[in-house]
Length: 363
Image 1 (tube, rainbow, N blue to C red):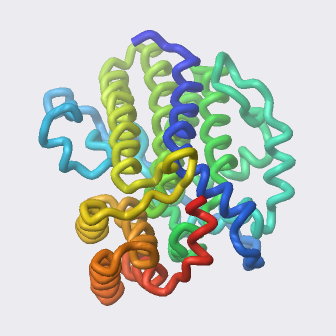
Image 2: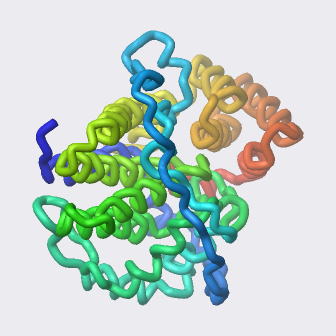
């Protein structure tokens, strides 16, 4: 595999190209949505609990089985890594919730928004085409390191509630910048043991971001963090002649693009694309409502179930009589189901929300 920094930049670009289907919603939230003061989030002031990060699992070459995302069975797979990422970068065992720290940089209600903006201004050009990164000894980068050693990062419901199209999200630019900066630092001194740790730290950070499985764009950013960490890890392993590590990193890299493609396909199925002439609202049809009900009840990935439930709110409000009845029945069942508290919370929002709250997101 030929190493190219341009691929790293391209990987990050693809995340936001795919997330473009959601951009109109985010813009509407900021500019057109009814004014509602955001609740201030209390700053995290506790100490970081100690943590231990285990060594990666040993690679047993005879047991490796590269997944075939192009095979028919892959259509039923959850959009997650099939390769065991513990072979590359196991999660730490640190207690505490990394989201409680990262949420301080959230806009507009985070306690450290000004610090986040100042950090973005401190970014410099990274090595090659990796893009803008924080300097290697930046205080925010160092502060973030132990938070990548946690076992958990949970925003929903520990920090934010699920509010359909208006569900708050963390500052994903800060999250992505941290991973890029660790990768950029590794690229400066690839011969050191610290380089391996920085690559693994970026992968762990991405794994933590994907734990919630609640918001599509957060999952895409987590996937990008894993992707760029694995790509630099491959390069470090190549320099050291560590062929087993190269093979596992290559397998993980080979799974990133199919996951992005499948995500784009799911967004299209869910209707999260602007309608004609840039409109976000797509008129419900019988087939579409049936598909949304099926996805809301059975999709293997929670983030897509939650998106389908949010779309059922539109069918409940703007569909035909039959569509409204079908959407209401599905939402009532989901709201009462004990299978998933998150699904139930989203269904309650979708059952009660008014059109005036949804319509700005549909422009």
